[in-house]
Length: 100
Image 1: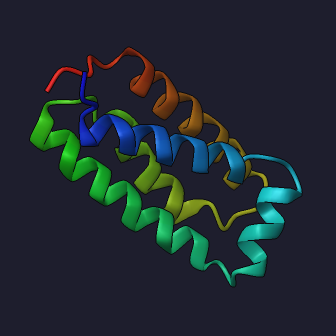
Image 2 (image 1 turned 90 degrees about the vertical axis):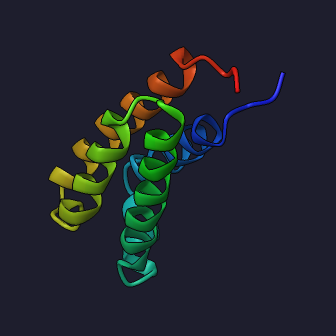
């Protein structure tokens, strides 16, 4: 069975958000990239949202990811939002049917 592009992107962005939610490591990574990691995540979430619309997959995680990417520069708040977004994206990917 072939996996939908949107589901693969939900998995990828969910795992990336989970990495960014690791205390000190995720924050250190974001700071060491000069916060460009948040811009890259914004673009990835926008691409994922496009494919979710196209393939009728859940959109909440990608929308939450876009919001997270815009406010994650705030210490503490960013960590919480990365964690919540990772959970929503991974659950969406898990429970989405993979049929093309």
